[in-house]
Structure formats: C-alpha cells, structure tokens
Image (cartoon, rainbow, N blue to C red; front, side, top):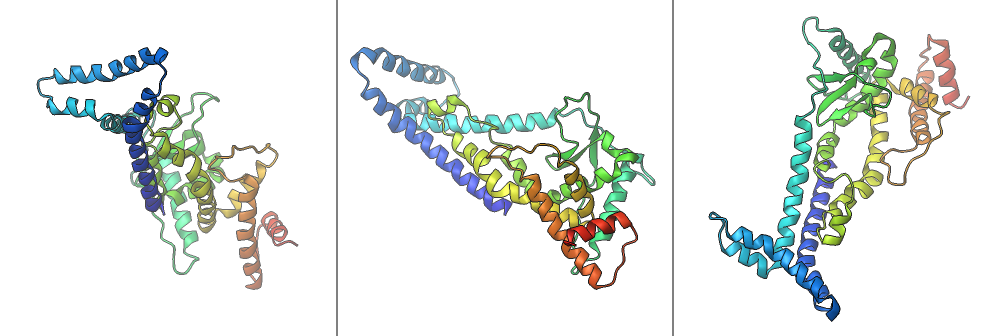
Length: 322
C-alpha cells in the first residue's frame, strides 16, 4: 500500500511540475499583457528581474550558451527548473538533518549486553512468544539495534518512542526497570511500522515540505500540490487507519491489554485534534482494542482457560459486556 501511495504522490508531483510550467509559459505572460499602462513599470521590472540572472549565467565559461537563450524564450522551462531545484533543496535539507543528529547514544550489545540492550531484547522475545499462539505463525522483524536519548527538560517535544528513518529511538527514562509496562505496548505498536512499508513511505514523504509557503503560491512554483497531498490527504485517508493496524499488531504481540489500559488512563485528558490530524480519536482506539480483547476473552472462556490474575479477569468480564 505504501508503494502505491508513493506513486500517487509522485503523480501529484508531476502535476505540480506541469502546473509550474504552465504558470511560467502562459499564466504570467498573460497577466503581463493585460496590465494597464500605468503598471507597465511593474511588467518591465519583472522582465528585468527574470532576464538578469540568465544574462549572468551566459557569462559562465562552462555554461552552454543555448541554455540561457532557451530559458529566456521559454519561461516555462525556467519555472520547471526552479521547481526541480526546490525539490532538490528539500531533499538535501532532510538528509542534512539526518546526518546532524548527534543526540542519540548507541546501546552496547554483547553476551550479555548492556542493561538497556537486554531490556529491549527481552521485550522482543516476549513478542515472539506471544505470536506463536497464531496459526499460521506471524513473523516478527526487529531492527538490528536502536538509539536512546535523554530528555533535557519537560519542554522537550520529542516522543518517548519513535523512528528516525528506520532507526528506533527510545527515551532513556522509558528503559528503566520501573517503566517496562509502558515500554512493552509502545514498542510493540512501533514495530508494526517496521514490519510494513510505513517507515519507507514516511521517509519518502519527509523529502517534501512540512508546510505551505506563500512564496510558492504566488510565484507559480506549484510544489504546494504534492505538499497538499502529504499534509491533507494521506493523514486522513491512510495514517489514521495505520494507527489502528499498529494497535492490532500490538495485540498480536500480547500487549493489547497493557495498551488498552494505557489509553484508558489518558481518558481524563480532554481530547482534541485538528481535522487533518493523522491520529484517530483515543476513544476509537479504545473501542478497537475492546473488540479484539473481548473476542479473545470469549474464546478463552469457551475453552475453559482460567485467568489467575483477578483484576485482569474482572476487566475481561467487563469487556465481554458482563
């Protein structure tokens, strides 16, 4: 699915390039031709600003002389070239930010490894054991390593658990022994993205702008078109559903109840989201997990499987509607 949506994004990208060409070749010349006489100075200024850089380009010894002339006589080519250069800028900026990430520490694997390494590996083992209860068995792919960081202050907006590209990033506080019941469901939820094409698709979208710039809109550089698809279409059409899929994967990994309880504990917090938010409502996630857990509890009851933990059994009885 991620590859198909990437192709759709590329189609919007091609349409943006074509729209930029039309803006330079037809729309702006047409606007210049209908300007009243008292605004002729504005038309002359725009023509001068357009041709001056091309004149200096022609003075470069290695520059083919046909290129500046072609750009002068075919302004649509100039708009298309600027569009591609803007694309290259956002791609370079994304890669540069990735290279400058110096706040992440590397765990020490070994036999046995460091404390943080062993904690995460034990969670992976728990997930694989839980997946064995399904037939056919669900395979689990895990990242070869991860990075951890330390929050500097309470205003640090980084998520406690997430991804940078295909690198798993975990807050150091979440790796403490006291917070293992928070780490396990969140880690299982994040592994759903690693076991699908979502991380690749997310990295692909990161090569596009993170917002709309008024300069793009008024200049005819239509990079806003694929950005519109990234920010307004895929969050509602795709990413909201992927959160529910990740919750289901966490349930498969045996972390459904812990994730359900974690979401329930946030119930007192007022829930708000924007219309274009990629996150489903918390109530929707809770109801989804209740359906999964309730069906499993009903099956266990039919099989005569008793629950040794009374609080968990009471919660299961409530989820079944008893």
